[in-house]
Each structure stands twice: as C-alpha cells, then as structure tokens.
Image (tube, one colour):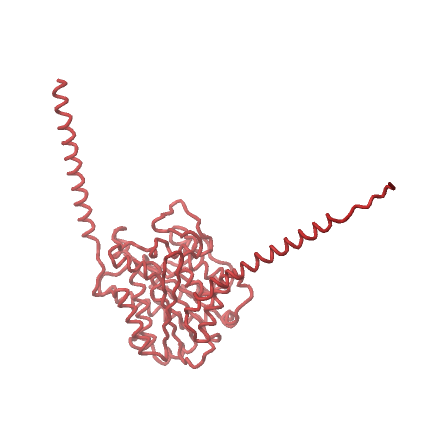
Length: 436
C-alpha cells in the first residue's frame, strides 16, 4: 500500500499539473475570446492623433485671418508633454483682446475619449466656414463671433491618447499614469471609499504633471469668462462642484444653471443630466479642472460637458462605452454638440449680464502663489508681444531659484545681524555698584 502511494504521488502531481494547465488554457482562451469581442477603434470614423492635429494645422494655415496655432511644451522629472492651443478671433487687427468675451475649451483630457477631439475639429471647421450648421444664419453667426475670443485645446492628453491608439483602449490617464482631471489643487488628493488608484491616480502633488501645468498657465493668462471641459461617458451638463455635493451660492450659480437648462432644452431634448458634478454623477471627484477654474481662476461660468455614453456597453469595452461606433451616431453627436457650443457662443454673454463687463478687467481677488503668478505673467506677455511660447520654459526655473535664494539670504543676513547685536551686548564690561 505504501509502495502504491509512492507511485501514485508523482502521478497525482502530474495529474494536478495537467488539470491546472487545462484550466489555464481555458481561462486564457476565454480571455482572448473576450478581448476579441471588444470594439476596436473605427479607423473609418476617427482620425489618429497625428492625423487630427495635422488637419487642424492645415485648417489654421488656410485661415490665418481667423486662426492661430501655438504649441506649448513642458517637462517634469524626465516626463515631457506638449499641448496645442488654437485661437479663434475675427477682426484680428484689434490686438487688445480684453474687451472681447473670452471662452476656453478643452478636449481630450482623457485618452480614451476620442469623440471629444473629433468635436474640436468639427467646431473649428465651422468657425472657419469650411463646414456649416443647418438653421444657422451666417450673418447672425458673424455678428456673434465678432464679440468673441475663443481658445481651444483639441487634445489635452496626447501622450495618453497614443497609449489608447497602441491598444490600451481603457486608458484615461496621461503618459505616466496620472489622471489629469485629479491633478488640480482644489481639494487635491482626497480619496473616497470607492477610490480606484488605476482610474484616479492624482499624481504626487497638485500640478505635478506638465499637462496641468500648461493648462493652468493658459487659464491664468487668458482669464476666460467661460470654461468648458469636454468629456464622454454619459450625457450631462455639469457645473461646480465636483468635490462636494453642492453648487455654488449666489448669482453666478443661477446664471450657470439657467444656461445649462436652455442647452438641455434646445440640444439634449432634456435627456442630459444637469447639476453639480459631485451631486449628479454618483461620486465625488477631487482635484478637478472645473473646480479650479471656478474657485481659483474665478471663471464666472465653469462647466464640464459629457457628450456621449453607451450605458449598455460592457465596462471593459471602453471604446464602445465612450465613443460612437457607427456613422449615424457619430455624425449626430458631432452635429448636436457643435450646435450646442454655438448656442453658448451666442447666449453666454447675455446670461453673464453685468458680470461680463466686470470680468473683462482682472480683479484683485484672484490671489495665487508666486509660481502661478509668474507663469501666467510670462504666458500673457509672450502672447501679447508675439514671442514664442518657449519663454514659458526658458526663465521660470531661474526666476524661482533667484527668488528663493533672495529669501534665504535675507533670512541669513537677519540672523547674522541679530547674532552680532547679541554678542555686542554680552561683551560690554560689567560695572559693579559695590566699592572695592
């Protein structure tokens, strides 16, 4: 019996191994089968990141009287990023842009949301009159656009987008795994119970990422009246706040909600969710761009738009969940949301009312750190005098270093001065009151 057990031990080990191997192959086979059922990027509908940016550059080249194209680069701890900023302005001979109503739009903050960058291209094509919206009178449109200065970031997270194009269709983070919409300073780093470190990695510190550093500089210098951060995953029109289940107090909250309700009625057929991001989406988000724009940059109207979502898609079928996959839906989304943005262009100044003129002049209540101020100052000067945007990088580190050295040397000099006075007092001869 013992002999039989000895013989059976290697046999049982072999059987266990083959059973495990069979199970692994079955699971692996099912995994491959599941992955093969994931919806791939439809190359007939969607541009590659490179092709999309080339199309935008060509559009700018054909319309130099309306559009300009700038590339801003930044680097932090070995990681580099660049962001293209397209500026639209009619009557470009009017160099002082302060009297105009300023709108800042950001697309493609999450790599997997390809449809948002396609919308950016569509809006730019309409602005340059290479495409047209139905039921939109050209004369009325020209009158509206005369009052506006629009800056658009077609693809904020180009490094993350390239990862998606390489096959990781669920990637939303940037090139080193940070969620750019958790890397801003308002309530940064707080983690909810359902916190997912893969999805919501906020980075090592606020503005640790070159992409958010660039966007902060653009926002601080441009000082927009309206900010919209465009995403996909659902259909919604969000206003602050994302990090708490409430909306702001006061007139601005009413103005934002009024505009969103009108957009919902005109373009969403009332199917879009409206309210604060934190109170509507089902979870709180900390360190978001929109909360920063409203609380720190003091943008009077700050929004996050979600332009598409397939609720029936598997949570692992990310391309289908976040992007239309057929031509009809693709075109409908672009048409509806392009029209929505042109409604914002038309109604935004009216809804802002008296705040429009007040917001045209920078206010003293926008207190920021010395780094933020200097960053914004350099962006504004480089834009106004036509210098290259590389000035953002050339002097910033030196300025910060000299400023901190100045503070340190001042403290050291004060310490030395106090020490010298103290020693001088101690060295004085003591005169005794008692006769010797």
